[in-house]
Length: 141
Image 1 (cartoon, rainbow, N blue to C red):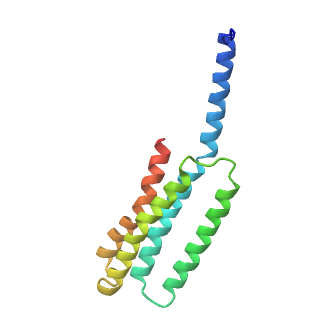
Image 2 (image 1 turned 90 degrees about the horizontal axis):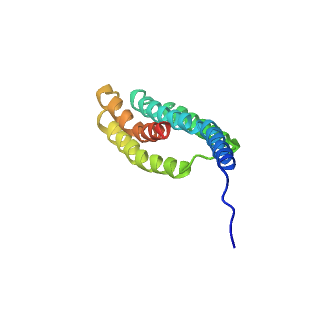
Image 3 (image 1 turned 90 degrees about the vertical axis):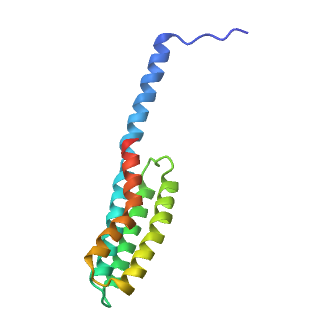
């Protein structure tokens, strides 16, 4: 049995179609970079608010803001027609890495370094770094 070899025109058309689809996927998948950057900014801001304004209202503001932003992000991501490769895993890893750092910064900071910008600024940056790293990696891909 002899299988016909695809001719050059058919191969070129297939390659052109594959490149077109790849471009669509890249454009529609760019939302994930913004999602990770917003997630990192949220962690950074929440850490600074808790540390620099230790009052009864700061945890409420952080909780409502994080919940609202997280919910909006989930709904937005569910509406996207293209899922980023390893997007869920990357978000889970970024959260799993940043959460212990965030909790340690908040726990130690609220006990020892209340309203000390020299503690809270680098601590907020360290807690927010994993989402920024994943956003950078996705943007470079």
